Every structure is written in C-alpha cells, then in structure tokens.
Image 1: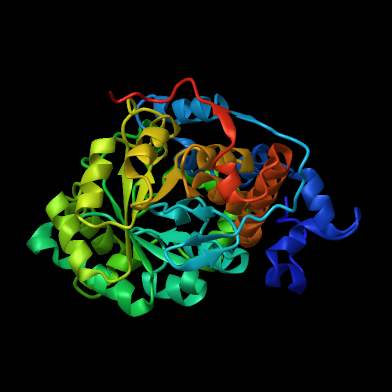
Image 2 (image 1 turned 120 degrees about the vertical axis):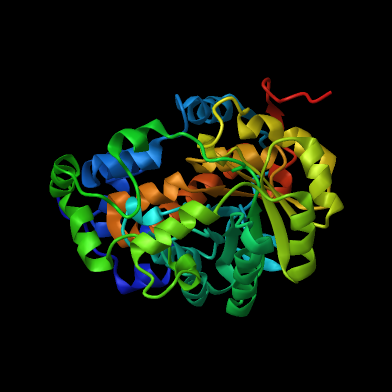
Length: 416
C-alpha cells in the first residue's frame, strides 16, 4: 500500500487546505476515506509493525487506565443552546503566544519506534498548524532541532536525571533556553518505571534487537521499513552529548537506563523555577494538593494527566479529576489537559471542565503511522475542525463561552 496522495505546495503551506478542494481532489478523497481518528487508526495498524502498534496503543499492566480514560471522556455530556449563532473562533493565548487552536502535541518517548523521524515531523506539523508541541527528553530529534523547526510552537518536556545534583537536568534547561524554547514542562508522574506487558512480550528495547519474529514483522510493513531506511534507527538525540564519544546508540541507551530515575521533588521544581525565565508547567498532576504545591513554588501551568494510562493502572481517569484541580487553581495558573484525547469533541469536553488547552500523543502518532510525514498535520486539522463543529453545535462561539457550557459529569472525583 502506498502512502496515498502527496501534499501539494498549498497544503504544506496551510494545513487548512486539507479540507479544501472539490470532491474529486486528492485532499477531498483522503478526507472521505479518513474522516475520523478511528479510520486513521485502522489504516495505521496495517502499515506499521505489530511491536510498534502495541507500543503506541498499550498502557501499563492490564491497560485499565487507557480504557478508563476513554470511558470517562465518553461519559461527559454537553448541553447545546440555540438562537444566537455566531462564527466560531478557536484561537487561544498560552504563556504569551497565540495559537490557532487549544490543541497541542504531547511528548512521546522514543516516538521513532512508531514512525521513524517522528519528532521532526511533529515539529513541522506544529509550526504549520500553529499549535504547541511538547518535545520530549527522549524524543528522536534534539531540542535544538525541534526549536529550529517549530519556533514559538516548541515546548520542552523534562524527565528527572538526579545524578550529580541534576547536572544533566539543568544543562537541558540551559539548552532549551539557548534554543529559544518558551515553555518548560517538568514531568512528575513517572516516580518509578512501569511494567508494560505488550513491550515486554515483543522484546521492545533500544537499541532494537532483531529476531526472526521482528524481522518478519518489519518485512510485512514496507511503508515503515522505507521510512526507517530514510530516517535511520530511533536514537536519544538529546542525550548523546552526555556520553563518552563516540555516542553510539548502545552507549546512549545505557545512559538513559541508568540516569533517568524518578520524579522531581518540589525543591527541585523550585530550583527549576529559579533557573528558568520562561513559562514553567508541571505535568502529571492528579490531586488538588499537588496543584497547590505547584502554585506555591511558582509554576505557570498545570497539566492534568495520568500519562495516558501508561504509568499506573489504578489511577483515576484524568478527566474525572480535572474539575477539582481547576477549581482549586482558579486563575493562578493555566490548566492544561492530556490523557485520552481522540477528537475535537474530547477537546471540547476538557475545555468545558476547566482546561485552557489540551494535548494528545497517540492521536498524532496514529496520523504519522497512517499517512507518513504529513500525517500529524492531517490530524491537527482534523481535530481543529471537529472542535469547531462541536462549538457550533453547542452555540459557543469562543473558548470562553465553551468553558461556561452546561454539562453533566457524574464521575467527577470528589476530594472532600
């Protein structure tokens, strides 16, 4: 199977062009074939190896957290009101930058396993769609390269590297600053490594170890194999300068295994606040008490997340704790959200419950797996258009009015 129609120059210049054209244009035919993320996912599954798809879709342990996120989002009801139709506007200002939509790309470690070259394609999609991209510590392109491609759309996520009093952690902060990154995102919700049975069964490690089974898997996925030949094997580009030269993949992977350990203490977050002049966000907050701690050390944003169900299978659905955290924080920080976003309707649900912006990781990876390098841009436009449709249906022309829509959320978590 081929990658489908190639994007025209106009489409590359303006992602909105995915929705343009006559019913017989290549863009229009693609939109007819892949009108939802479920359709994108079915195509993605046919084009990438089984181990890559399992890595993308899987959670931890029994995948209960992934299922809980989906069920909880689906249970949120929003009530339309009619009679005053107005044009819908999705622009949002986050930390001094205006974006075209309140939808961004979440960090995904070793994203190149799902689609080789993923990090730079995410950066380009964010730039073209004018949405934020949180590039990860374990992304497959360096923060310098991401910032050069994405400009003001580039954010940077940090895991904890506590050795030598966080020497590498604070050097990464310095590098992000030098590259022009405006928003730093510290991940709190990975205190220990989780067990991911799908990856264990597939023998998924970096450097990748080829077996007869994986070789056959790759051979049966020619689009992925061709992308691998073009882009090279996934590597931890942000980490390469911290290992002894030559920085082979094996050395860098060993460094990552040894050095990335645990979460950040609040004292370290406070040191980040003192060292970083841009916006500081903490990611992985599920309890209002942690939100209060974050405010106390001076963060600018709180990203409510359960790591997409990939860390702790008994954690509540992130959407179910969002209202309580938003109520505690008020206007003292921007509330952001990820975990389970698959549509513009999901984005609208999160905004109605208190989020200023939402992020998705799996959705954008599915786009790459389904359509190659242009797939993340396709998903960006798909989600934005779906959000516009939902807002029009609700009678909420702005994000502020969407935040005030009548809703029913039976499963909202009560911390009292």
